[in-house]
Amino acid sequence: MKEFMKRLLIVRRIVQKIFYEADPYIIMAAKAVTALVVLLSVNSAFPYRAVLSRGLIVAAVALLCSILPWTYITVFGLIFVLGQLSALSLEACVFVLVLAVALAVLSYITLPGCGILWALLPVFLSWKIPIAAVLLAGLFGGVTAFVSVGSGTVFYFVLKLIKDNAVILSGAEIVTAAGTEKTTLVQRLLLLVEGVLKNEEMLIAILVFCLTTLLVHLLARTDVDYAREIAIAAGAVFCPLLHAVACRYAKIDASAGMMIVSALVGLLVTLTAEFLAVGLDYPRTEKVQFEDNEYYYFVKAVPKIRLPEDKARAEVQAAQAAQRSRKMLSAQTEKGKE
Image 1 (cartoon, rainbow, N blue to C red):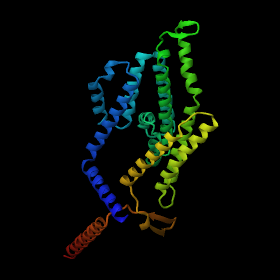
Image 2 (spheres, one colour; image 1 turned 30 degrees about the vertical axis):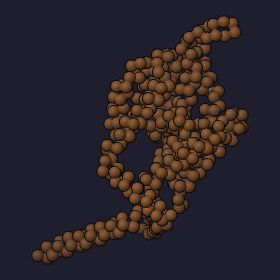
Image 3 (spheres, rainbow, N blue to C red; image 1 turned 180 degrees about the vertical axis):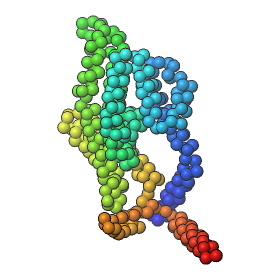
Image 4 (cartoon, one colour; image 1 turned 135 degrees about the vertical axis):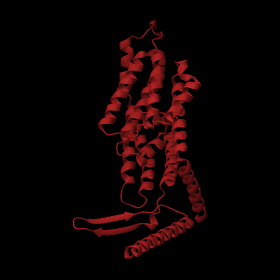
């Protein structure tokens, strides 16, 4: 076990070293790849405008996103969605635009959260692994990250509704018992509004994902050992369990096996991200108490996990720095005497 942990720490050190040395380029590459995935997913779901599906256009926008903040991936993803939907149905395009503005205002009122989740969560939901995004948002996002999680969930179900009813929304003739007929503008708008308001599956998903995000965020910031690991595990158990109970209560058929797989994938991904990004060494926790004229302070310091040779090297460097400080102080003292 010790040998396995040592190898993990070596891998972690290599990964961190690569990030430290090439951090700007790795972040740019990650933005470009994320934008590429989002834009390709949009074009795959709604292939209605050939110009937006051209590889050169998609690649150019992905490269542009690599030098812009993460939130711009969501902005360009929304632009592509609106552009594709404008060729399918003007009503659907306007409906998505109004919905996006309303959710943007809600995010602004509740303080910015993780805007990238607006684009990523629909992708993760289409891949059937939404819990990974939820756990990551709760662990690394702010307290208002649940707003972005809910917004991303709403976008997924709205776009799914539009995709499933593309023929009706396009205004094409449909076959009914009375023959063929076209739907009116009012009927298409009612289809969208009722499809959102009466979608119990969407409401359950929003509730479950938002509560899970809050649970992980709050547990990860408690003053207990292994708080972050406990938060991840609790979220991975809580999310599929609550989803199964809610679906059973609402009499909705849901794949329990798929949610369990999603929870296992989310658990693995989030634990790996936490280990690489933080990796706290709880057995070496130190607690310090001191006071001044106004307050009494309790300080808890948890060091990060490091290899023994890294610790020894850090101690040598600290000793060398202290020795240099003493020499400089001694030189300044002798110069003052002269």
